[in-house]
Amino acid sequence: MPRSAPPLPHDPLAAYGLPAVVSGTRIPVPLIGTAFSVAIEAGLAVVTTTRRFRNAEDRSIEVTMTFPVPVHATLFDLQAQTGERRLRARAQSRSEARETYEEAIDGGRTSVLHEEVLRGVHQLSVAHVPPGAEIVVEASWAMPLAAVPGGGGGVLHIPVTVGDVYGRSPLPDSDDLFTHRRRAGGGPDRGMQ
Image (cartoon, rainbow, N blue to C red; front, side):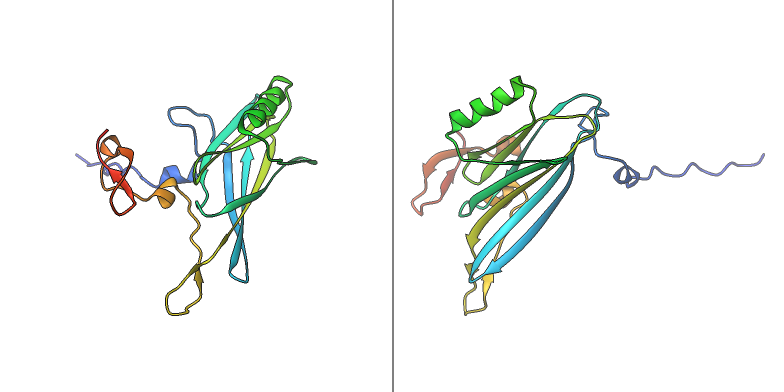
């Protein structure tokens, strides 16, 4: 009796060729690209992050993402481009900014809201991204370079996760609780609450 060839093993990398989707759904993730541009002059780094979003759904969506910015950096510019329209951020109090954003949502207009939810942790919301539309959001921040001991120049660290800002714990997320107490050395005290 002829033997058939054994089935090929499942290719675990095949999924990386497919578009990213929202967990548990077939809805595509709106973030389609991130790029960094760095300019350094006289020990000061200016970093511009460009994020590109696309609405692949058949209805208007709101995009919300959380991202890190170094705690010693100053975010000084935020712009969004959709089609020919360019939106430029203006600083407002938290409550006023939220009210302006909610009014735009109620009016069916595309609007962008940027908030620093924790020191070094920022949230970007883009409301009413039309079906098929792309929105490009550019955020620029500046900070001095960290000096290298021995006069070897400067170092710039661009965080890409919140763990890059606050550090990573060896504990599983379920056990990693922080209190607001300070240790004798000045750092945060890890422990159960």
